[in-house]
Image (cartoon, rainbow, N blue to C red; front, side, top):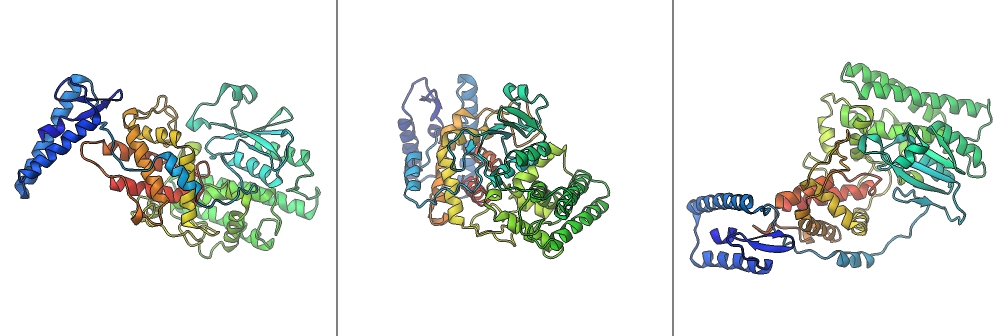
Amino acid sequence: VVVMVRTSTTTAGRSTSQGSTRVQPPARAVERRVRCARTVRAAGGVSGGEGKDFMKRAFERARGMLENVGERTGVATSGMKCDIDAPTWGELERMLSELPQEPVDDEVSDASASERLFGTTSIPRVKLYRDSASWCPYSQKIWMQLEEKRIPYVKEKINMRCYGLKPESFMKIAPSGALPVIELDGQVISESSVIARVIEDEFPEHKPLLPYAPGSAEGERARYLMQMERALFGRWMQWITSSWSDGSGYSAYSEVLDSVDAELGSGGGPYFMGSDFTMVDIAFAPFLERMASSILYYKGVKIEGNGGRWPHLDSWFAAMANRKTYRGIKSDYYTTAHDLPPQLGGCAENGDNVSARDAIDGVDGVNWRLPLGPLNEKSLEPWWSSDDPVAARIEAARKIVSNHTNVVRFAARGCGEPGKPSYSAPLSDPNARPGEAHIPAVDAALRCVVHAMLQPDVASAQGPAKNAGMFDADATSASLAYLRDRVGVPRDMSYPAARQFRAYLNWAIERL
């Protein structure tokens, strides 16, 4: 045992023997550990309770020796060299290339795209500034409007104040820092309601989304519904941010939501203006999406897929989920539940939410655990179209492989140092530094996760395994957990893909 702990730690790419000043290759250090283990076994070893006590005492002594050596030499003893058997990133990329891939559908919004040309070759007249993480509901309105009208545009992502600084170049054109902002033929326009009107006026040849004459019955109805959306927003804000009079907050909110459901029914549905998708739906979409997630997470009340009270609202959710433009823009309950508090100044739980909160957070022992079957409209977070778990896993794998260097370094922040200054969004730390010594282990573990997602089932997968003394499993697990908790929808991938990826990260963490 003493010989085993006199092994190697990695420093500047070399392996230093803890028992001497001799520099030796990592492979020889590994061989020495193996020889020692074989010698102990050949000698008959120790067994039973006495053996367990002996091993426990020996490893406690060994840990103390390592810590003392680390203090004396300045060599880190917590970042042991990783030895995980996993395909290389190149091999994983080749595996993915051999799988069938659906052609890109340009009708589906792409959160990662820097420009959307919709088949045109001319320089876009519009530049959209929206938030980097796809959290801002007002940016979402303009994003959806441009996508629905298929107006070519370029995009620049800007941090919200709750998770990072805004660049000086943006502050020069928009001193308030508020999002969204567009540049139309070089002219800067802010405020989402103003931007929406300008887009409708300037691009009449692109699918009108409010095609009603002023004073017409349809125009008046659209105006009335827009006012109702603001009334619903106000009731939601009062309830979701307060812990006082929770029952009355629920009653006040539900009263307006009942009216919203009735209006959807009276218009013939599935949209607010009947069969036509309009700016009224765009006005409601970001906030009904946030209401469905936050009210379930913080208040324990199911708005989407309620089971009877708001049937017309469910029909609207289903119709929206099957719109290609919205499919690439919509977030998931987990992302929304955690991005709202820093924007709103906090959300208040009422105690009836614990079961739903833990399920959404994936800490209930069921969600975010393998195996995961397909989502459907009866899921805790309803999925109103088909879900293919295999396709979802492949999507997640492609996303990680295509950006693996950055993803690995991002994950390794979980065993690194917190950033300064910090920001109000707890899951955002743009100035954090990764644990450099653990990056090889994190890289290998993440390759195991991706490889597992490409197998027919998890039973076929070779997961990461802790090889005693080879690397710090706690640091690697912390890094995978850090990544798991920060997978954002739609910024990083779709909800079905994120759900599978989070579960496979948990699988790897448990193996470690």
